[in-house]
Image 1: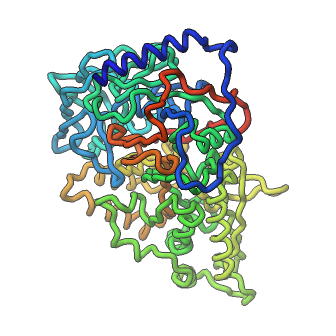
Image 2: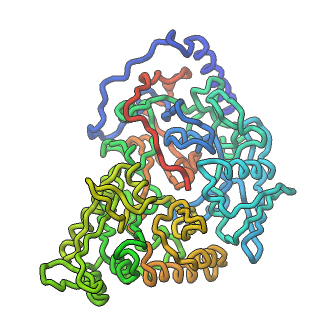
Length: 572
């Protein structure tokens, strides 16, 4: 009966679209004055339909989509190979891959495909589709970073065989990737470049709504038969449409310059990410080249201040792994705590002292040398700048002069690559910098810490100019470790990075948000790779659900060019 109703609703939707047209001939319904920011007991869905935002300026291909709104749509149209929880562990009995195993080297994997998953055209998901999807992922800007050791995949009878160049027994955690039907990557569907997926919804013929996929295993439990796609492109129209009930769920990155301000009366559902904030050094600078100085600075940052600046949308961490993960070496935390006295004592013990009794620390290089550290940070983030300023104040309190340089993105990146930058008429060295990196789900630090190559080129995220040639081997031992020794290997790796070399200071990890209006949605359980995970278990309530029209939801306001939702971080 539900399937018949869904078909009738889709037919009615198509007929109504044909009747009103998609151009200027249709009459747009005016959106009333925004109630955004007002506290309400419950925010009803004013149009009695469930809608999400869409952005036609960006791709809806799941391997290309970087726009937050379109990523949300993709999570409804495509299933992931596996799902991760907020501790970055694989969720059993969820996703298309049901079982997995690897050999003792961690290089050769066998992935079992769960039967009973079907694309929206009724064909069953097969190993060739998973292998095909991996092939496109490795070539995509969004996902290719996690495939650094990937050598290839081939389909078998109910399984996919994967070969890696470097042993990684956590490779399965990298596979929260969308699956598309083999041969459909370049398909132009009603919503643009939209390959066929096996998720709970698929596009209608007009491309302006999602309709329930009758072949989806949880079809009968889906909370709504139709999800309407609106289009609001500026910050003010997105917020107004959300607060007034014309879109019902949004994704938000509180640390990004694209962060949108929503009323506190809404419901915020946070989830863990691998977006790590850290401080690193130019290891060719005056003090950055000394390990004692780098180790002293481990105690110089108030990590809890990041959580405060991001209004709880972060978690403090002293080590390069999300702190709720099972392998997180909590025993090291006390050795890396915020302690200005410990910081000063390490410096004094190494000969950095106030030799001329002027209240400022100097270091001895034949004779006392005045210290001024140049710390660069990207000015786009108020939270990062806030951490840098707090550090500057704290160092002044122990007699160490720090100058913070808040640079535009382009100038910031040039400074990291060159190791120096212009400040007024002077060229000054970069001593320290505040960075952010999106780690892989297995917390592989290779691209962040491996030294430059033989051609003197910096590798991806590494701007430290480190000459430590042992670090990659240490990381690889952690990646190849079995479950029984993984935590110990990560402990040893972190102890070496923080307490022996001091080459990386971890500040914490960001959280992101799914936001719904109060009282409308229940059962929300987002995760990093799938903000709408378990959508079939949601409960969606409208003031008058029975009155929901079978016609398209009211048209969106015309797109505007200010404050576009763009520039989101690429995955990995």
